Length: 472
Image 1 (spheres, rainbow, N blue to C red):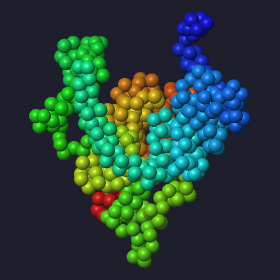
Image 2 (tube, rainbow, N blue to C red; image 1 turned 90 degrees about the vertical axis):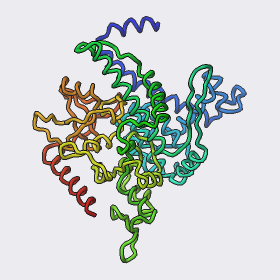
Image 3 (cartoon, rainbow, N blue to C red; image 1 turned 60 degrees about the vertical axis):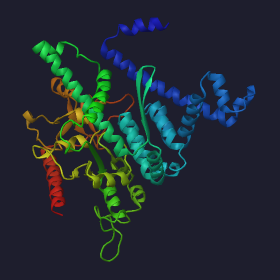
Image 4 (cartoon, helix red, strand yellow; image 1 turned 120 degrees about the vertical axis):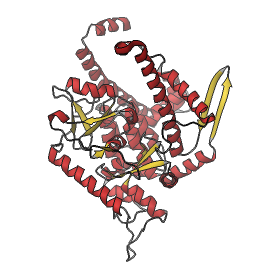
């Protein structure tokens, strides 16, 4: 039967095959949601005892012939769909999938944050539907980090205290293992490896061009991506041994993006900025908000702000606010402060401009290529115009879009457009007017705010704030 299905599907044109995938995925999600509801009812009835099973897990292992970890995952999904308002409905109607429900289940199982979850569930459900999984997971991490800041700090301290690394020979093969440490150090090591890996890639490109000339692009590179990553590790060790660096040591390897409120709170709690007015009234030194220590309570009054809370590297590695301050004081990173509109208001001491707007700022506002499904880090992407320059598009931060070289070329070739929606996200629109959306996601509501007037207003506002910070 499977072979027959393969034969039938192989005869479909590309558009019909894509339609079939989008038809099947919501059906699969509905069945998974129904299965979770069935497990929840079976657990409530103690159905497993019918065949002498002592627990629902043993019943599931026997009935489904699955592993213990799979049985536990199914139960946690069923529990989350039942306890988190709106999750089961979103799952059953196909708006979210198995991966997103599993992420919700993990958070629901965290007793330290569970009581705050209902307040932010609508925001997280919207993120689960509209964002790619990695960005959605980052939103969840932000929520957990704010709702359980003490726990996050304890976990960070434990990771630093028990940090460890091994370089071993295992059967003639190199095994490098490192665990623990703080977020900024982790991001720095990743950035170093990425920089060396990029250098290995450039070397392969240059060698191919030298051998084949103008016909180079029709020939494969000399090494695979995996081989280049390994060779990058070798290059790092050899450079360290010979005390030679790659590039300018004055350039920061890591950019930490932090929202203005979090940054203000760090400064106030560390005694580096006033936390009260002359009359003694508690204020946030950066934003003017009251009670800077009660940050989560302020978010509850306006939950949509949770999606804009950031304290992470530009590659998405979560960093504790204390580590941001320590790293900023040490000068090994560049801090990037963004306001509630996502506009960069402070980039520390170093700034490279993209025709009057921050080229790096455009990259730092995202973790990866904007094209749906592409996970290439923004450090390796291009910054180009959303509204083409040749068609009157402005060269500024508001009109900038971050895409890898391939998707940037595809954008021009296929005449894709970018449009900003009411939820603050940017979507790619095909030439025929259809929107690139995940299966099951509802179309967004677009705002007519991407015109020249809005672009000029936001750019002017960003420049005013940056100038005020520079003279403060």
